[in-house]
Length: 480
Ligand code: CTP
Image 1 (cartoon, rainbow, N blue to C red):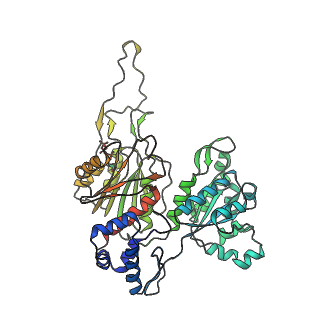
Image 2 (cartoon, helix red, strand yellow; image 1 turned 90 degrees about the horizontal axis):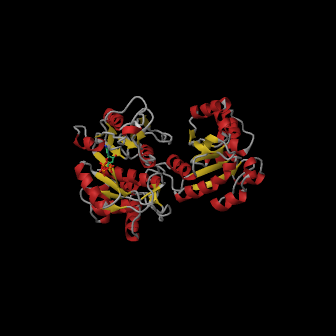
Image 3 (cartoon, protein in one colour; image 1 turned 90 degrees about the vertical axis):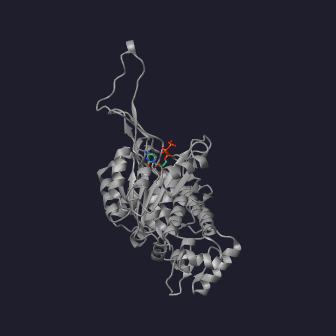
């Protein structure tokens, strides 16, 4: 998907009166529409037909991406790209704001930079301005800026205010409601959602003052991403390392883009992450699933208005905004949580469920066998319940049941067989395990969507983009 010419076909379809109406306008069948949706773009002759049909119905439409500026009843929808006000705090992680800005632009977001005074010790306004193609603001009292765009207008023009790195000092000032520079003034004046990506020394993060500030900010609805565990710039290991730019950009994208509420009233279950099957009290069987794809899907379904239960194995990701998360460890627990969340209109099984569990997991630590008669350790494995397959056979089968097939070879053949074996509507297949193309833990994915009648090959894209496209595709299934 190229953000500049991506066409939101779901919104257009809704405006035209549904899928059949769009087929009639274009004089094509359902599969052609599915292909356009899969590609996220339409050929030029189709674009002009859609443009003419929409304008004939009284819509004001942008010619380049067919986004609807204004409906016949003058109800407006955002024509411009969502705008992120990127507040850069004064920490060593400030340089990562540049990469995050680039990633957000890739996702079709406009970025305007605001720097605190101390951020200027780490990066320059010039580099931010050059990268974002926008003036970078850093001074509350600059008359030129106030003449061009007052700080209140700047704060109000944002679809999301992103603070990164959110230093201990910036968080403390925001929590106390100070407005002693442009950054904190914007945080007080904005009505847009706020996302903070904290970064600091682990002891500062754990300090009761920071913990209290975090609580205050959270209670006021500020979204947080990270920090994560790992090496911090000061050489100490612990929690305080800022989340990676790709993850921050994805979270910003999910929060900033106002999507049509096309899935309002629908319920969805999403499974995500690995399951962890104990061997004894200290060891377990698990896999490399990061949960990123399932989490992104849950977030993007919720962004379109669905009521989403995310049933997750152990991962390090925060629960997406507006999603109910149920945390589990084992496949058996995941299945119980899925059953408890039924009935649902949609179920998407993105979890990498362990196929096997140890027959008799020990409560104590297993000891090495006696060396004199060591014959190797034998574990008896028994098969775990297949959650997707049991949903396929359930009396409460969701109307749309989607599985993921991670294959190392013969992807299409294996995934097609898996789709019919597990009785799901769509199987989303991808190749895993290639040394030069990791999917586990990566921010990108490329898939085939296999249904009973067709196979769509989607280009490589960010997992967030894929989730957005899938949510759009799911919406189409529910349009009459
Ligand atoms: N799945 C599930 N419960 C299981 C195993 C898999 O719900 N016990 C779901 C996964 O969430 C995924 C789909 O089934 O949506 C396919 O998972 P995959 O691991 O590719 O297939 P398996 O059935 O495990 O088959 P195999 O490992 O032999 O390829």
